[in-house]
Amino acid sequence: MNKLKATLLVSYVGEHISGGFYLRLAHQARTPATIRERLKSTAGDETRHGEYFNDLHEQEFGNRFSARPLLISLGKVFGSASRIIPLKHLLHWVATAEATVVKALEKDVATKPSTPYLQLVTKILPDERTHAEPYTL
Ligand SMILES: [Fe+2]
Ligand SMILES: [Fe+2]
Image 1 (tube, rainbow, N blue to C red):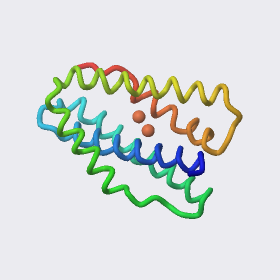
Image 2: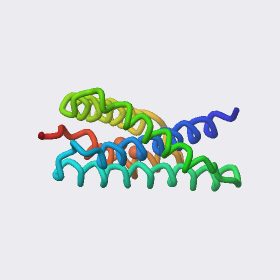
Image 3: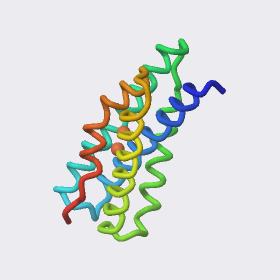
Image 4: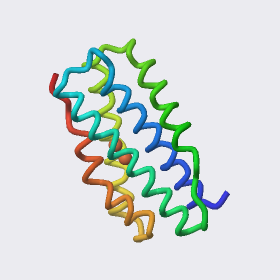
């Protein structure tokens, strides 16, 4: 598979699974209202990012991925399964994982020649930095 196509597929899949995951966390009964709003907003960001990667795929390869409902459902399953982890620990882990992603993306943007893919990464980085902020419970 073409390298860019593979990168866009991985990004599309990851963003939509994340979208479903955050949405389920937001709607779980034990999630406090203040955290719920942030999680809902983050879910919206991730789903939007997934579609940005899909737009770029269409621009570059002439067709779109069409697994969004399936991937969001899969993310929700992960969100439900994560109920076994205390919310405080789960949110800490999630913010840490986002911070790791931010670091990797910032490094790519800083060190690699600009491409449409990296321009898109630059566009979503402010959202990702917000996702990486620690949660206060
Ligand atoms: Fe994202
Ligand atoms: Fe994120």
